[in-house]
Image (cartoon, rainbow, N blue to C red; front, top):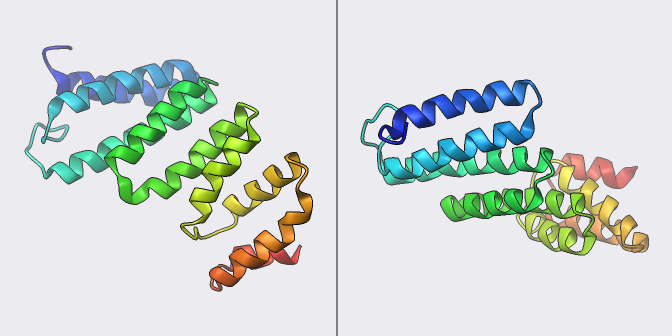
Length: 173
């Protein structure tokens, strides 16, 4: 495998899917790590060994690192998850906001609501659609005994993002 990074990446992507389907998240994360390592060695080519624009390779790596972070979180390997999400941010800075949401989930799983809130606030600064981030905000503010800040924070967010209907529904409940 080491002599053929394309084959190594392909086999390990398949292993990742198999382990993930079986909910063996630690093994899935290990297989995906091997796949990503092989992809990093490929340089500006895709899995078919066809030259592609470097940006396309970086975006694919970012998606792979993001998935690795989610698998590591499920495997309760929090340091590995943080590293993977940070690498995803490096590879695709335009999507960095979304990765902050994932980092908030990792910090919450580590029982560090202060760090989770800091990451979540960076995510919410991007005015994400939907209410998932705002629901996490409610959870974190409650955990930090700051529940009186919930309604003002949601009202302020709704003012900044008047087209987010899910946020308006959350605020109404």
